[in-house]
Image: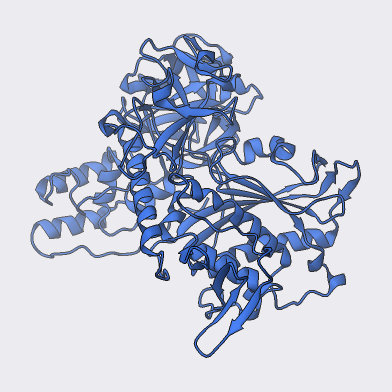
Length: 633
């Protein structure tokens, strides 16, 4: 269950032509039905999946109204959380609050304990993925806690749009600060993630003699604020879905623990929830660890997370039923896009109504008014467009001048290590360590075919050889001229010549546009790379796949071992192709993995021998010599 991210992820989707809203017949607020054939394949599957999730979530909400929900997910739902410590804060009262060494030690324990407690109380149906950011520069708080806007400069490259599901920010507890606060909900297009501020609790300091058997009280505060972010599921359809509040100390009475021979539960006369603490079979922590300082609140969070919180007035169970969690892991945010009309003109949003849309022949890379964030609305079961420049303003496509625009995605998933394949050349990009330049080659698992793509900001990226990460794609002399060469060069500081925007085409290939040009992209030309005017040719189309995923799953495709020519059978033709591949290389990753019948990660003579024996009916199965070791970045 434990996953610690050491890299940050952006978003990925595709180009899309939107003409109408979506309707699955669930909500009275949905509009007319859309023909999904108008969408490219990848966006079709994403929207279809979200429609199915929405329908199932509403069905579970009805099915478990009077029946306590029990479930164990085959695959836990991922939830990505960034933990941020602000070590020096200038408060709105102009005092300086600095983190002590003990504050830092407490914060360092929070992500792991948060992961353990949340996964335990979710019955391991939610998989928390954590990352950590330390800000030691002064941060100025504009109110009685640190707002998103206060640390936005640090988050712009570390946590771009929709890179996390939640960001939790911690500062030392101080009388200048107010209560913990959730200021951004889970589906806000301003960020693509929820945002909450939490104090590093004084109760966790040694002066207050905390119980060493308990998890940190700071973790309790973080879970409380984190769960506030999911309360907006009450908006899923016509406000008829009831979500409980995480604030359980109400004017209806204090929390009481009720124990009898049949059950043990808490109640505040408004809600009722179980006092249940099963043995931890994953992390091996004690019941005392999970109960913590305020077990009634941890138990409440458990009931909230599992849809087993009983509403004594509504006479039904409430909370996050299983499918509600599947809306996370960035699913509802479809990415960042350019919008173009039928004349090829780009849309920029410059005001607060549809009359404020301006059209230009090319986008302005320095103006985020050209960036449109597409978000699936589970409230209306439609897709909304939100201008990055005015992130709190969006609308349904059917009500705007964008209704017939083509949307081309410019956000990309990364950073990571990838194979890069040119569709026109039919070969992979490789790095030659001798010449320190690239070549085009057939597929192999050699490190020279792997490329590191790193986020540079504003939807632009650098591309570097894995074996020479200090070098990168570079436009010769930073000139925006037709057929200007693209080489591999050390970092020069000229980002306009060394950073690229990845525009996703309708066939799920990418075109690379350098920062220095709005019209020219990277193309293959006679075994070299140049920048030239984009015309949708195969030579400017690049297939990018994560190296780990290709090596782990044989390029992620289904194939028959030994069937190198992909005709559905293992024959003498495959023997001939395997021999050719041993001497000249394989045209595709798929053929390579079909030839690697012993799953060693390389294709060798022993694979050829096994295929020959199979064709001659001397064996009816291939022997696996060893499992390939996946690369560790």
